Length: 223
Ligand SMILES: [Zn+2]
Image (cartoon, rainbow, N blue to C red):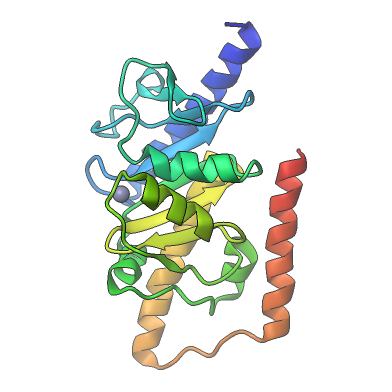
């Protein structure tokens, strides 16, 4: 393996690991649930391993695969939810990372079968619109991966029915930051709806912010 390739994999491993530790520390998931991936500079994928608790996870525990899931480096098996990650990374070259969590408030919407409505300004700007619920498929299946990937075509997040949240971003740190934003929005909106029906944002603002999201996402593809 060339030195440049090795360094690229190591850098992505460190980015994924930092996101994993933050995800765990911040309670965005529980136990060994939730997983993170990042695209390496040469187009491979770093994935969190299956069934391993996060606090003690080290860079060498992460697994490098190709976009089809063939293991290229690492002694462990990749997460059983790898198809969620690989389907998104295969479909959208501009996406550099996927974070899947069972964040409590977002998962409340997923379990209730309700999309998270885009009634917060920052939400449209950063996430690109309402976060829909992808229909139920068993965890770990290709069908779930394909369904989730189809939903993040023009936005950063999708809920998985009876399950949790998937967020895509340019990097592991961005995907994690967007996960925090979606979780916080879910918390605010679930509280706001108890107080009344939140008014929608004006259409013109939504279109403007949506365009801005898509522009930034396309710019990431050009880098
Ligand atoms: Zn899950």
